[in-house]
Length: 307
Image (tube, rainbow, N blue to C red; front, side):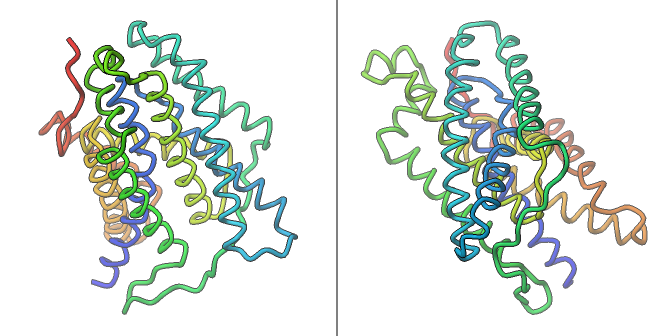
């Protein structure tokens, strides 16, 4: 039972990081029907930016939490500017093109960002400094680290804030109107280009937070680190229902729990022969089962019909 609860904690932490990235996918798809496959690389840029800032300020005498906060703010600024540029230069000219063109462009941007990161930061993995206390918190058997508590808390706050923004603010109403019909929204005074750019910036900020949390939790960064989290987050968005914000969160948490529990029990059943390195199998098997039984995802796809 103790092992079960430990796997639940690990799954929730993993799912929380997936959720931050999955929301970026589903927000963009819900508004312009585009899968931004470069989104995982935005996470990577956030983590690498944080690593650079922490390395530059490590001898400044600042406490670890202050270094983490400063590096997080820098990562958010860099990723927001990067995603704004990607949307304006790569995706906006193709907005009325056949769907295959933006998809291929997104893959090209992903490879471009990986290559540039490899040139700037070199290809070798780099250790991320331990900025928070490492003593585990005992929960009566299962343990959780301070970093994992921070991940759960920050994710919860950001999800509440995003829900409030989308449902209660002028920008949120503009986003929903643009998703429904951008031409009619423009006639009502909404500027779709600005709304779409804001959506990319918000998604980038969430990905930056996920990247810094990922680096702090696993203690390493490298130029390819965004590929698998980006793919898993896309899987989570599809699992919950692409275009559906609550669905992205539910799909991410389900995916994290499936990975953690599946890998843990496989490790026990095989006596340690198979373990966490096979966790990806469970994630994609879960996706196949859900899409076979419920093609629109767990909570249903939510994309406006613009015909």
